[in-house]
Length: 248
Image (cartoon, rainbow, N blue to C red; front, side):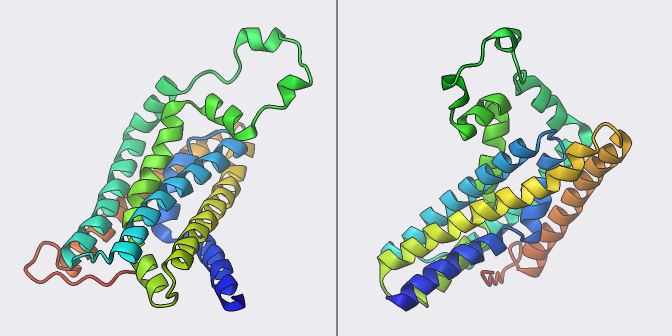
């Protein structure tokens, strides 16, 4: 029992480390550079982690409970989708489409009538996450969820395979996946918050620097996405007659 709890705790910290994978950092960087609030950046990271956990949980449960096997070509296709998404994010960032969508679908932070409304004790007891989600708008909330869901496809089988080789009880294995996901949510929230600090507090004084950072994140996203796509499509044999996939 003690060893099982140790494995569960290990799963949480492995999830936090998993949040720092290069493809994850590059993906959220293209989003965080557009934010002007530290708290909202943390919420975005948490939502990304929720989407990522959702995919890993579904795939992992299918493998653990129903012994589903993932063919090499399907596994390569899931990782190839991540490369394409990084390219798309970078292009949208460089062309200004992300900024246009953000301005179009993000509501005003404070409405005029809310500024004059009296502040009561009950009005300060709102749910912190719900308040920030309402201020962010539906678009800014769905975007990291979708991106995290797609990213969960890459390597999700590897997590489940690791669990199956370590834990014999399927319910303990599922608990491991959940704690792994919680660790990913916590790690991504902490990372995006840390990334947003210099952007937010230098936004007015170093506006050109932040613009350059946003452009740089777009270029990096395109370059890294092309690297992953080439590595999977050609190196992994996705577009050849001999696909070989090693979950990682």
